[in-house]
Every structure is written in structure tokens, then in C-alpha cells.
Image (cartoon, rainbow, N blue to C red):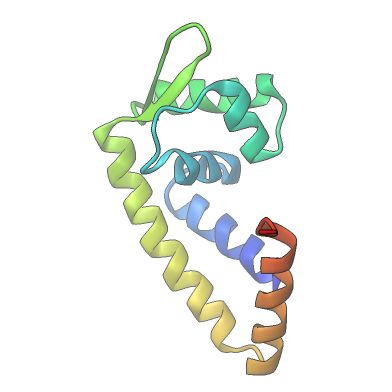
Length: 122
């Protein structure tokens, strides 16, 4: 399941002329308040310098803007449009890849991913 998700991200990123990490960054930035470089780095599991370089690449393409001393990054209108398109494509590609999997394995895999990624509420 993780491999199918990884392949889906790669396919969508290529189709939009993005690197996979740029796609992840755009999805994180979409619909969010401006995100500081350190927070973006944490959410991407990247170093602050890697997150800054990703943000700068998105800025150079007109997809994002950075402001302030802490590098608050947010998507431009063009970036938001591309993020919406990316979300839709990713949903379609993931659904297509998951459709061929055994339904029981999808449920178990989804539950395992949720356990690994969602915080536990005490």
C-alpha cells in the first residue's frame, strides 16, 4: 500500500512537472496559513535548508511567495490552482491503484497507516 501511494505521488508530480517533494510541499501549503520554514521542514521530515530550497524553487516558478524573517511561505493563486489540480489527480491515481488490491488488505493497510500517522488522543 505504501508503495502504491509512493508511486501515485511520483506519477502525479511528473505529470505536473514537479519533483515529489515539491508536490508534498504544495499540498501542505494549500489551504494553510503561511508556514515558517522550520515548520515546513518538520512536516516534510526535511532539514530547514531543504525546506527553504523547496520553497525557493516554488517561488521561482511563481507558485509561492516567502515573507518575513522566518521565511513564511504561502501559495500564490497559481500555486493554489496547481495544488487543487494535484489533489484531484492524486485522488484519482490512488483510487485506481487501490482498486486492484484485495479489499481486506486495503482496510488493514489503511488502519495501519492511520495508526502510524495520526496522533493518539488521550
